Image 1 (cartoon, rainbow, N blue to C red):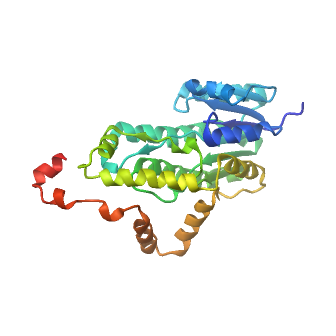
Image 2: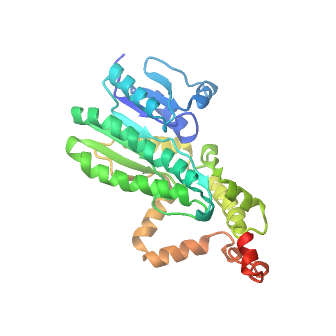
Length: 304
């Protein structure tokens, strides 16, 4: 069989990653499908199996040892990674006040530091070849932030900035860099969020200062996802189309809402843009101090 270029995709066992994996399996690319060790059984559940072109490997993107191992295997067996698709990620739901230092680190470690480390590993061989493609799944959360999603948006904003620098740096070697920006997707994989201990407690406690933020934002986001016409399969098609474009742009909106928000950011004055989005937040008039809480002594309010 005439095997094509070698593709490595992270977080390939569920959601968008699984949809991209299935799409890649219909091509002539040589594919490395990776996921954490505990997630590998999902491939068999979805009838995704190894073949002459497909290799399934464990990869916790935060593991230096596993990152080095997968890139070394690809270089040994197929001359290196030609196309890297950074898809693995996690999402914390918490207001800034409810994110502790270790949770900031965990969010940034998976969503920002680890994909950049994988890029660093594959670049030398790409430069030697004078070609290569890096496609990283960002988010609408990388161009606009929502309340209760500060850590997630911070990780995506960081990706956006680093990739913009990278676009300039590696262009002389013919390496193409693209940020894929999905918005809301009707997918269970995109509904898996982590709560910090404080954000979980706040959502459950009626008297907590941020209770209304959580109880209104969570169902609001869920409704937007369920009503979206975008699916993992439709976004996966955008990924493959981007891979095949001769000169893909730095940023590719992957859903209609991503395109719409990008347009709004360009045409509206920034103050108007933020005012409009604030007014669109669910039941935002109920957020903040309630009459009962505002009447309490400050020492009591601080202990709520």
